[in-house]
Structures are given as C-alpha cells and as structure tokens.
Length: 163
Image 1 (cartoon, one colour):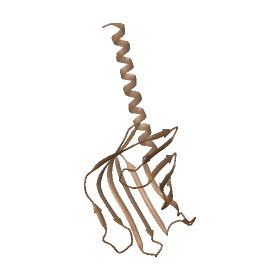
Image 2 (tube, rainbow, N blue to C red):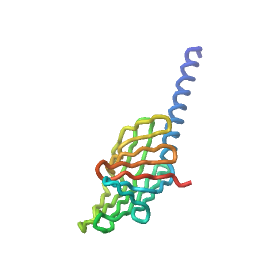
Image 3 (cartoon, rainbow, N blue to C red):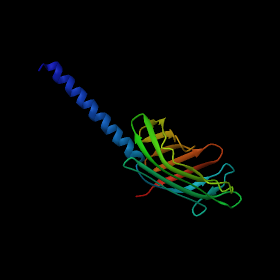
Image 4 (tube, rainbow, N blue to C red):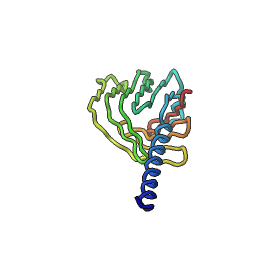
C-alpha cells in the first residue's frame, strides 16, 4: 500500500466523520420538545397560553406538532402534524404521515394522509438554523433553545425548548 493511498483513505475517512458529526449537530439543533410561549399578530396583539397553546417534538427523525388557538371571532382552531424528518447540513426533508387543520370557520376539517415527501434548503450561521417548512407555511429559525416561526401577514410564534 502506498503512502498516497493511506493519506487518501485518511482524508476520506476524516471527511466522512466530519459530515456525520455536522449532520448530528444540525439535528441536535432542532431536536427536542418545544413549547409555544407567545404569538404576535400583525396588529401588535400578543397572545399567550391559554389563548394560544402549542407543543411540538422533533426526536429521532420524527416530528409531532399540535397548536390550538381562537380565531378573532372566538372560535376554536387547531393544526396537528405527524411526520418523519431528515436533516443534513444543507437540507430539511419531511415525509408527511398525517396532518389535520381546522381553521375555526365551521368548514370541514382538512386531513392529509398523503405520505408525500418535500424538502427545503437550510441556512446555517453558527448555531442558527433557518428554513421554510415544506408542508406548513411558516419559515422557522432555531437559535439554541429558541425557535421563531413566522407566517408573513398572519403571526410570529415564539417557542422555547423544554428542558
């Protein structure tokens, strides 16, 4: 075995390990249990529990989310999601298992059991991880134990990791 082969093998092994650790570090950045602490509406109104309640988890490639709120008319509304997720250094990929959306209007609840897979590009700066959720409309920014979900013209949700 030549010295060139040994060096090349070590470089490949090192790069492989680096990519694996980078992927785990990224996954760890979004993994955990998240609690909704505040929602800001476009008119400046701030809602907190029990007016708006949310809990989500991302653990071992599984995502589960439930959010409940009241519409401006006072009707209850909710969104729930169960999916499989994969996070790499450049992409967030989600496969929908089930979702349910009740907008509180009295219209029929919308269910989705499509099994569809979608991906979104990730932007990472230090510990900050940002991307647009492929099935949910908000864009999300994870920064340590804080998460912000923004749906332009509708709300900004502030989440914190449950410890």
